[in-house]
Each structure stands twice: as C-alpha cells, then as structure tokens.
Amino acid sequence: MSISKLTTKAQTTIPQSVRAALHLEPGDELMYEIDNQRVILTKARPCGKIDDPFRPFSEWSSEADAEAHAKL
Image (cartoon, rainbow, N blue to C red; front, side, top):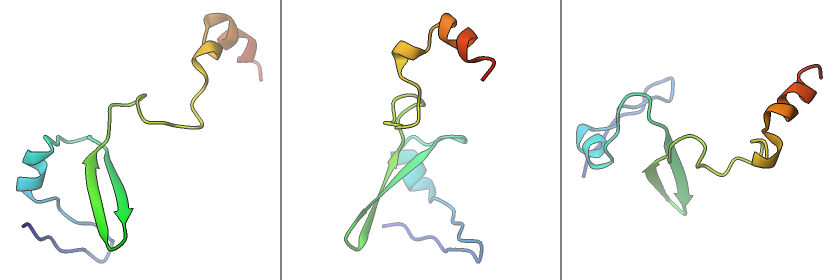
C-alpha cells in the first residue's frame, strides 16, 4: 500500500510504485471512478478513445464540412 498527502491546493503526488504499475508518464491523463468509499484510479485511454459526447461525429468531419462551418 502507498500513501500520499493532499496539499492545501488539493494536489498530491502519485507514488512511484503506482506510476510504475500504470506505466504513467508526464502528460498522461487519469480517470477516477468513485465506488462507495473507494476511488479507482486508471490511466485514461489515448485521446479520441474516451467517450466524449461533445466530439464531432466522424461523418461530419470531412473537408467539405470544415469549409462549410468555417464561417459560422
């Protein structure tokens, strides 16, 4: 088990053993899932793989669409 402290700015250092186990590198994104009184920390999938309801639909991302929306 690893322990870290929370700063007054709500920041913490992820222990090296956790970073190694999740293969974390600077710039990686993390996902937090709350399960009752536990938090599950997971390395987020690469950009574009996370289900983002605000991302454009792939069928609307053609060059013609970009030109049509450029003046909006």
